[in-house]
Length: 330
Image 1 (cartoon, helix red, strand yellow):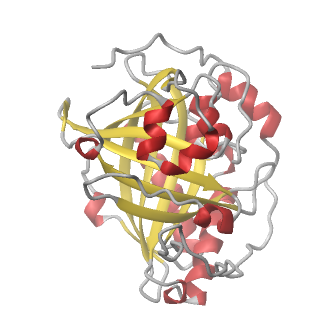
Image 2: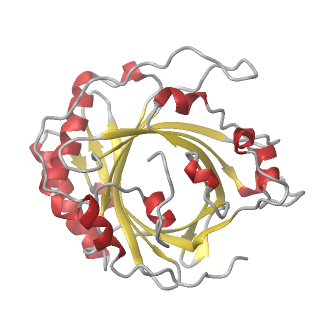
């Protein structure tokens, strides 16, 4: 059992970060060109490269309004407004009366942030219900990079006897320095229940992790290198479902808004609005649906510009808590 760590110093953290990265909204038409196809390739065992099958659009938000569930509902009204203006359906019936879900999130890395500085992320997440763990903890290992080909060519598959699930996502975020556009990160993920992880050996040793996740062998860890809780911070995620967006042509996405705060002290770290589209083939996403999706993403930035926190990701905020930001690919 991991005890709650000392509270990180988050006073004025968001305001200081914003002053370096925030600018006035810029109203531009969204880029709607299709992402280039992957070049043919295969992993060491001859398996073909994984291809993107998810599009997840994310807006990182300030925490000012998220002091109660009313803040989630307030942002939901902006989502409804943007959807209406862009001709996007927004069905909130399934989310009416839904209570926020609680999840606990922990990131593990070496003292010098060797994983994150090389575009790897290792986290553990568990959902809580009525104060108790409702599911088995889930391990997520990912390689996230702006270069789609590079992300695809990293084989994130674990060396495990049990089942695991691959998710390869294109993640859309606002531009780093201004509103009114978007950039893409490609997140190549594998996830599995904690019970599927090997029980023998030192799970926190970098050398042992490289045996479980062969992609980490490029980091060349010594026998004494270990991972620990990043910045001694356990995140409590408060997640509120808002409804389902319908971009037409059979393309729908569940939308939610979340607050990340420190466990125990409940110091707010960052908020996020997100929606995700799943598809089997890129061709399944019709051009009109893709255009509506991009238009909605841009319009929500514009009408909700006062909420937006530029140049950040949720993971990046946790890594930056104690000062010097690591060199990341985000």
